Image (cartoon, rainbow, N blue to C red):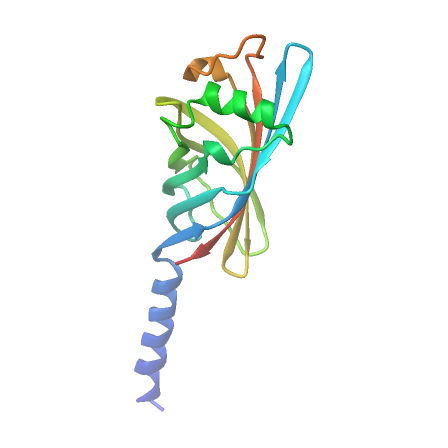
Length: 182
C-alpha cells in the first residue's frame, strides 16, 4: 500500500502542474463584423479571416498576451466599389494587416470550465501603420479546453489616419473566435 502512495501523489502533482502551466493557444479562423456610416449610408461588412495567437495560464488569464490579425483585403461589404474605396482608405496594399496586440487582461480574470467571464483586454491596435492603446471588453468562455472569445467595441478611424470623405468618426466592431491549445 505504501509503494502506491508516491506514484499516485506524483501523478496528481504532475496533473495539477500541467493544468496550471502556461500554454499557447491559436485560432485559425474567426469572424469580424463592422458597421460604419458614410454620409447617410450605412456600410456593413465582415471578414472570416480572423487569426489569433495567445499565451496564457489557466485558470488565471490576467497575464494573457498575443495578437489578433485580420487581413485588410479580406474585409467584404457585398459592394465591390465600396470595397475598393475601403481598401484605399485603409491603405491595404501598404498595410495589409490590422493587428490587435494583447498585453494583458484586467486583474482577477479567472476562467472556469463552463463559465463566461466578462473582462477587459488591454492592448494596442495597429491600423494603417498607426498604433494606439485600446482597451476592449472581452467575453471568454472555457468549454472542454477551448476558449470562446467575443468582443464588441468602437473606435475612431480618424485616430489611425483612416480618412474617408463623409465618413463617421466611429466604427463598431464585433469579433469572435475560438482558441485551441497548440
